[in-house]
Length: 167
Image (tube, rainbow, N blue to C red; front, side, top):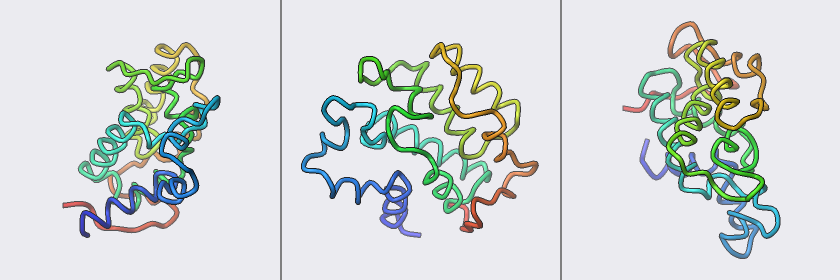
């Protein structure tokens, strides 16, 4: 698969960014709408772009998901920056991103458990870490996140999506 096709797939899985971008006058309107920053598109934030790329790369490299399965899982996430898992790096009270290493690592961990959790313990650790760092309960239940735990890497299927592992 060509890199341009993978990037197009990634942008479409990330909340159909091309369509969302076409519906606004400026990129700023999509990134952080006036008086409604929490409704901005998460993938318009560099920290989210980097973290998503790392999470997809990690899941595919460890053969937990194929590229197509990873994109299918990604497309199921909400893409408002104020929603989970992006709330790990977004402060809704100030409308600003939280750029600390601790919060970025938390987002890495949350994306892993949303897309391809290695174990139920990993899900519990991610939710506990969210509560420790953000001071509130993670809005996605442990049971919902644990549904994607697979006993063997590579067995997971997301809505029947098939694809070849990246090389």
